[in-house]
Image (tube, rainbow, N blue to C red):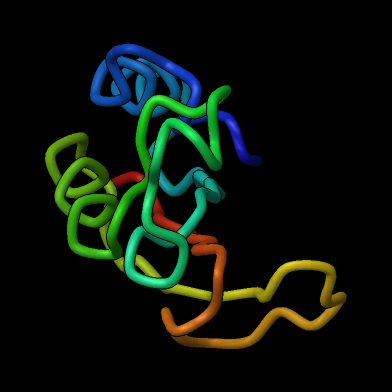
Length: 96
């Protein structure tokens, strides 16, 4: 959780994580939602970027993950719900 925005090559991180999954295995990954918390170096100096739902789904699909379900969460809220309108995206995908 909350790691992909810190790496230079997020596509390679997703690829490596997916390679470690068996068919039917699940990847759960989260990131700040670019649409709700746009990245800026001033606000988030430790982050390299934030992602949209579409960008995350694209990277996951490119690595044989399907049945992707988006969840969302707002900052400091214990509630996780279906959708992509919160400050954080949480995606669950299943390896084909």
